[in-house]
Length: 543
Image 1 (cartoon, rainbow, N blue to C red):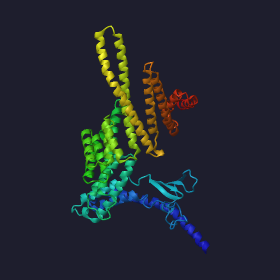
Image 2 (image 1 turned 90 degrees about the vertical axis):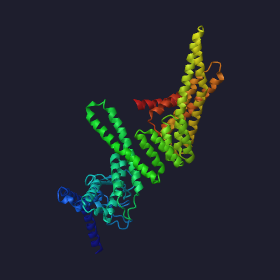
Image 3 (image 1 turned 90 degrees about the horizontal axis):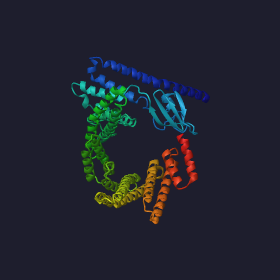
């Protein structure tokens, strides 16, 4: 008897797998037919004036947005598992049937697989569902059509009762959250303009009264995310406008296409950037919990609009009202640093560090800014030294023409007065950059020490070494002690640069630029075997 029951159970389960796959597709096909029927209904002059026609259409498209993945959950077994109670009738094979194909994920653990179906794929770890993604839509943009159908239902409702019904508000609560979620995913997938459009619909629906259960997303968070998407889309659109504008003269064949793109993104930005400003202002007025980001991004939106003065005013107003909000301070740092207004930039960098001493990125920002000032003073210093030397030589040639020699000597005096300060500033900002890099490295975990950070630090030492070397060559031949001290410092800086460039090579073995620096450094430090190895690797990578 037990054997008979077991056989029947096996047959029942096997049949359920076959039926599951057919039912999964049958349900989708049935829904698609009902949606086509709805398409016909809205073309009928009589039916398209009925609230029921549009609410039914909205619900069909809401179902289409969920039907593929609605029964799945994290940890769901791919088939019956003894250790999971109830998995006999609640597993992926029962819900979706056998996959079209399976891919093993290269793990030795049984059950680490990807299952592919017509409308989605699923990822399993040890036979349990850990991720899934819908890859094919049941219908195009079902949530947009559902939203439009709900709005149409309100429009055709002559008595105006539909928009005030509790059931209507319950439907709105569901769709606006789904639009919010899909908007988030669209933004992550690079569909920036569409992501904003989805959040705009969420905001429109949120203007209607809420039911008690409608607590998933707050009104402020709808505005906050919409503002963010508007700003991101506007910024990306500006980059595309520039790209297509720059391409007009290069590729005349596609001129019409490029102009269409330019016009599209230009028109979009007339909507997006003002919306970003409006929505961030709303968030600030209502004291959103991310108030610092709201001020910083509101300023960014004004910068994107080309109004730098308004953007700066917003940041300064924000930092006065919320002096401990780091995002506002970061905004001020990002404003002043590219403009070369380093005094202001350092003021805000130091303020940010005081608030967050463990944030290694702030030290790196300070180091990068200090390095830029160092390079600027270094160039000015050597230009002044060269100019002084040239004027000295010219004055010597004019030694028998005192009237002509005097203005040259006067000019040389003016230049010579600037050299000590330039040298002092050059050295001061090198030390500031070095100290900031060291503090940055001390305050960050090993895994976040990026290639770029080591590379920038290595370049700082390298260029300081070259600056010291060049200055040493200009010393009078009798100043042997100064020359020897300078050459020792030169080699010390090369060694420090070597340490950083070797770290770059360790993290990015194919980085040709780091290898070129190392080849030069090994040569100057007479490390012939090391240089030979690096040269061989350079030859292999570049030939």
